[in-house]
Image (cartoon, rainbow, N blue to C red; front, side):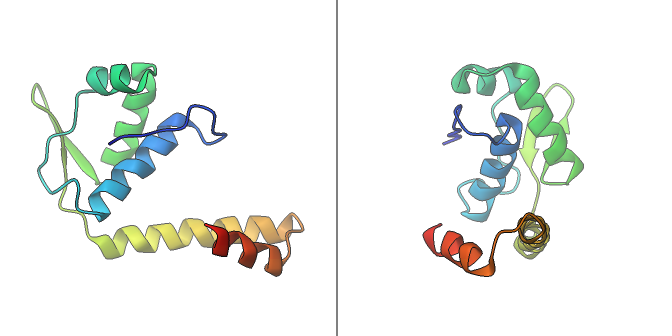
Length: 115
């Protein structure tokens, strides 16, 4: 469920952050669903617990999950439109960086179509 690519250039905490948001948008995780503990998920993924903790901290900061002391972390009632808006903001930033780096619009179109 929480698949990550250990060979990816994308940091593991960022992959996990995005994966949890994806699972929420696909309704595989619903509001108030309990997430695995940091230790459980770190063991399942074969990563350092600090990595999972960082992803959870970012998710909590962005009001995607909430934590209850002694009980764990749970999914918030997330507005899909807000998540999409954030994704488009990230996309726009990435496109601007790519264009600045000399990537052509055609190359960007090809990349999008291949995704």
